[in-house]
Image (tube, rainbow, N blue to C red; front, side):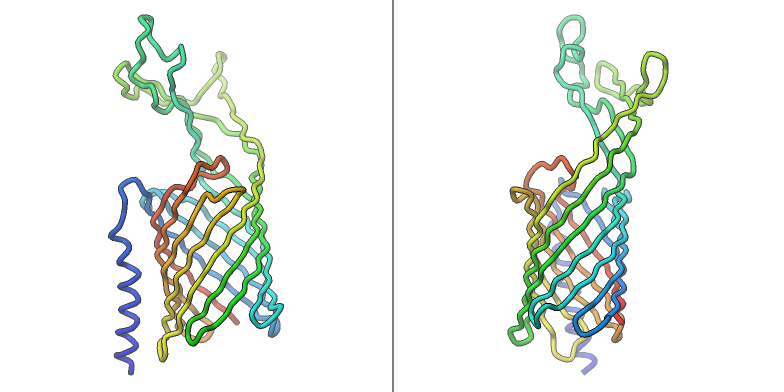
Length: 281
């Protein structure tokens, strides 16, 4: 019996790794790690605390860390309502570029070799406050669990003032210097990014299968992000491994596809591997 369980778990892990061979050169690669503690208050009410850390730029750059609180209440056997708040700290990179303006031409009217290159860059850690309210319906067909979650999410990014680096190039477009942008008196110029809020509707469909006599349950999901129009999709395949009664590990592969420009955040198309831990008592 144990050998059969190990074979089933191995098959699930192989399925998780297969999509990693489909990388596109223009896509980013990241990793997400999370830990979640859930306290069962009674048969209907749960409260939880979650922390998360993310990497991007092919695992070279810290992207974000966050902590959050949430509560869920089972309204009916098949319907759950929840609400939560998260504090996010994320790494931002803002750029402006040289273009075909008059000051980007030489005295003979020829464009310099750095047209289209970075002109000013700001790199900084910023704070965001996120609130959400969700309704989740769940139905079972044999050993297959089907759930649909509709989540309203509001995120507020406070005003942030930063300094920027100014890039200089030679006529061939090679970088000659990177210096803090200053005024005529040599004082650092400051750029203020105004505070801004954003409402998003997140719709997620998930399928999870309970394999008989196996502690590993595979799942797949698709999630759509709408902010007046569809701008992002996430596709996930993974598995939950119930190590012991209060402990669960989650492994997953996720592909994030950004469908349009977004001036609030700058998420790229990304391949993601994830690891999550949950303690429920």
